[in-house]
Length: 158
Image (tube, rainbow, N blue to C red; front, side, top):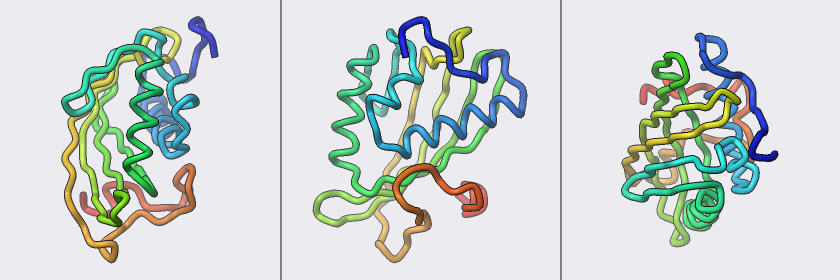
């Protein structure tokens, strides 16, 4: 995908296209393939992820490599919260464990802004980690996209 690439659906979003964009984002992150995930963002995309500020695809790829080296067996569910024009707000939860076997469920919100080609130009993420027992896990599926019949975020009461 080059700098002039496009990734439908395109803004302005409606309920259907915003929902599709959120699920596509979830599927991409669940691939845990930084180079693939970065292609959904503009070459000069700007992020705030927790307390880290990231600019451009190269930094996105480096960030995601660090993230998934630390957050093992990562499973993510995103849910549309709101949308308007070229912006989408999502809430999400993901489960993972560290290299010592300690499990966490991370909860957060993201605000996204897209360019006219459907690539994300701005991403702001606020995230909180909650330690859990392995027996408290809720997200079970093989690495990759969440199966279509797997419950969504609201199904868990999160």
